[in-house]
Image (cartoon, rainbow, N blue to C red; front, side, top):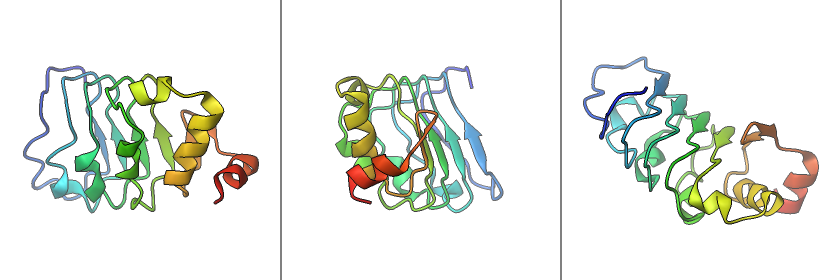
Length: 135
């Protein structure tokens, strides 16, 4: 964290990597994570310029995704995480799509797209929210 990294590269050989912290850099995307897709459980990438979640789709073991203060403009990007069954803790504060919605509506939309999520932006998901989301 806190470097001038513009791109994630060469994670080959990191066969046991579980936590990757690349916050406060110059990342625009989450590409080149395939080498750690089978082991990575936590990805901390807040305070970057990330505008899409294409590279996160392969992270089948991911439990925690903290990416506040980035450049995700559309809730459609969250749909790209829908197949990550282990994902339970997400943080999207200060992304354009988040700031354009009321908190309750935003939380319901996240739960609809990520039905296994247990914590959103540091707050636990409650039974009423799950019911409102239809999950």
